[in-house]
Image (cartoon, rainbow, N blue to C red; front, side, top):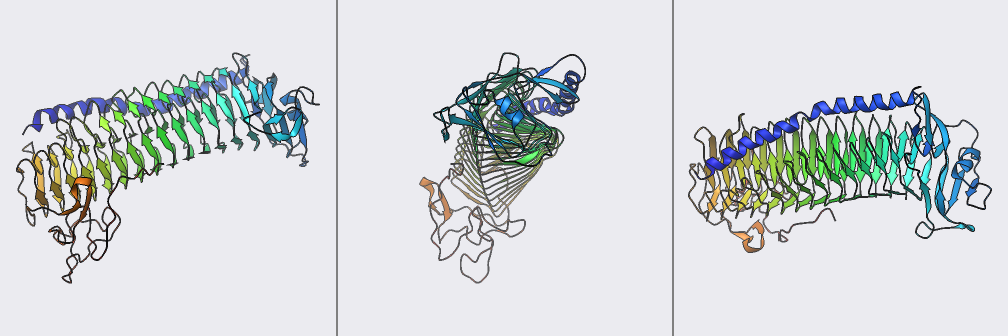
Length: 606
């Protein structure tokens, strides 16, 4: 078959590229140990003072006395630190517009650090006040700026539940310490503008460490850089963070995670409702977000757009090295990986990930456009719209599942994706179940709806109750492993309905509907298959619900069939009203006496 040479080349290239990702796990422990040694060494009696600005220290046990302490050039307190020193737990330090700095020594890690501010109490620190009237607060009109001298960091937070709200924090350039450094504490950071800071380590904007539990809400994290990971925010060392409603944009890291990095010792993050735009990971990947080294969390209702990487991983979201993540209801679009990684989402190295109800569109990557998973990971891909993505160098424009992945792909709309091979879904050496999907109009030189490559391992793939239509090459093309093709509609594809290009592959076909494909399948159609027009509601406009007189109604088999269809309707139903419910062929289970709304792509992330 025409696929044979190109598919074998792609499969060989897949294995070479995947081996680069396979060594990433070793970096987790190495990177963590290096940072721990550097920080402990600097902190312990070596004659070196770490630069920092705001240190939140050990919690005070004094009685709470609520008071307001005001800071301005003509106030009783002219520096922020003077007011902090005078404050009691429960007090509020109010800071007028202006530029503030300072120098103070604070205990940390058994040694001392040099900083600009040190908070050692459970207080509230508020910026944005009018200098001549502390009854007026407007963060747009009155900017309270913490300015950092060259060589110092911005904010070191240690041991309190303080609130820091309404400041501009800028200019930090610290060695292995970040603009906002959170150590063993639970602060609330809100409405701050964290701009143009740099670290030689991780977390140019915010670094969360040592079992901290911060809430990071409604901040602007802009144009921060890190020589290691996380240009914007790093959550590390067993910490748990809520990151919500922030704008995280134009940050840059030299390894992982231009925007946010979660990792090391089981750190956890809830990342909800953020705009994560135009961040870059120069090295490995995760231009927007990266989770690794046992990190876990929820990534929901974010807009993750126009992030980039030139590494092996992904431009949008990277999940690797035993991470556990749920990714749902996000818009993930226009992310671009110029290396061998994916454009939208990459899952790697024994990670367990659920990807549900996302709008994954217009991403580009060398190895997978929309979603890519590899190296013994377990992925569940449910109810997403995966559209207009492109794999620039290898296969898998919509999804790419390789190297011993276990995957369930159910209820997705996978349309208009491009790749050299397997433009809809590409897989090898993996156990993949593909059910209830609309796989349509995917394109490329070998633009199959689904391709199973002939890898070095054994693929076990089940393709059941899908509608596979108008792809530029074959509907399903098989080059290796054991593949079951059952209860599918294979319609109007530019090649065969089912293709087998390697004699060693095993393909079982039954109860499928074939119509108007460009060539005859070289796999027997099998028991219960039909060669007739499936009669969709509106093929030209992409409405693939079945009409009431469709021959696909009650024509499938219940063996291995899913219990619901692509919209969550129960299977089987008695669609032909003969008194016996039987599973329909295709992604849709026809419901008698019910009017279907047109099938449209939904931008669930907006």
